[in-house]
Length: 328
Image (spheres, rainbow, N blue to C red):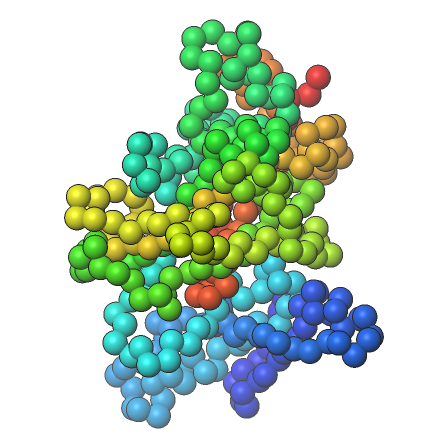
């Protein structure tokens, strides 16, 4: 990534993504640009000077160097520009937020991060147990006391088992200014998330525990899963109605009115379930990781990120994940 000088004329730098270049390379005349995105990742809106003359208030913003366009759709345009025609009275926009609160019996119960004392001192991260030997360190015969996978840990041996450990993403107005029962404008409700992850490391599972097929995999091994909202008289699939009544005001991760929740899970790709060079090239061996059964046992680990992007609103959210394997 590099910068382009923006001190003079306005610069328009448009490129095809890796997927677009692949479609263009077919050479059969079928390629057409059907969608594009704009972003302002490099803009600091705090540079707007209200004390300056009307003609120069935004001068520093206009002269800020801009990013060179990137062909990698996994890293390009973290903050997209969206158009909300006819909606000039919005005080704020909805946010997407991971519900990491403790579990409870309501639909607003969360899925907390792994306790740092069980995750080699690392906080704010989920842990995917990649093979049965790793799972046995929490549920096997050698474990004394509570034979359960700790909060924030995911049984990632297969899609079915991982579905019991779902990420919960809520969206809504994170503000106390509105009544929590307020219905959010449908134009501001995200109904198609794109989930991206390293295909060598993780796979996506549906809430019913079925492997979900990726939409495409780019040249950097990043798989993109498009999760549309399916309607059949009610919301089904990955989305759950997340609206609140007055008694639910303090539940969930959104303080104000909320809308649909996205729920999905991940499990370990076959490459990281078995012995893989990935652990030695991009991973770390952590000594004494499995403290619940034996404080001297090591674990092979890889840290990665699951990224969500709202296809309508451009909202982004990164979920930190550690994949853990116990070797024979």
